[in-house]
Image (tube, rainbow, N blue to C red):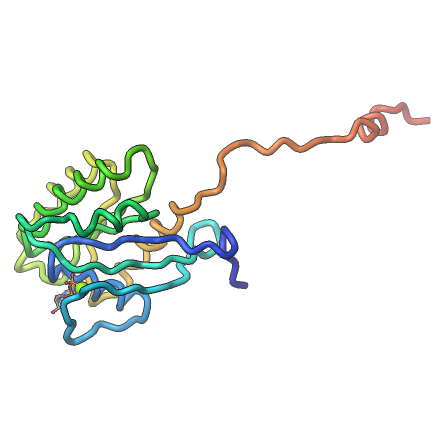
Length: 199
Ligand SMILES: Nc1nc2c(ncn2[C@@H]2O[C@H](COP(=O)(O)OP(=O)(O)O)[C@@H](O)[C@H]2O)c(=O)[nH]1
Ligand SMILES: [Mg+2]
């Protein structure tokens, strides 16, 4: 049965990072199971999907696929998206050192904007299939992610199986159930019935 954790609510997820790191390919693969042979540079695209969570419900997510950035270029255009994002996916390509360096700038911009909001962020090191072109060391990337308190996955947009865990993780972190305890009231006469002596 199709159930959403918050009926009617669609949460906004921003996907951003270096130009050509594979943002559009990742969304096309995880949502449609399709790896486009060629992709046009993105201006802005919106993808809607129901994503499984580890709570047995699905989250309705609206992904904002943005134009890629390059180091030195202003990331100002991302600020409006950042203000409204309820989840963020930062993408770099493991065969591009520049794409990884850019994430630090994007994350810093984001931290300034989000203030005290707790917004789930995942980092995807894409193009894992291009091992022989690797420029970003896994350990180094994981150390950065740990420092920034974000979860990092290496993935390949060619292989949908690598994308499932990160997307389920992100969806599970969105709209988490309240953590306060629910106190069940017991009516007084029920206790009396239990405590009354047996004839
Ligand atoms: N080998 C490989 N190529 C990829 C992967 N993801 C994307 N690409 C290619 O990288 C290029 C840029 O991809 P695109 O999705 O348009 O990147 P975007 O600018 O970040 O949206 C395209 O030629 C894709 O076919 C991947 O995981 N592996
Ligand atoms: Mg794109």
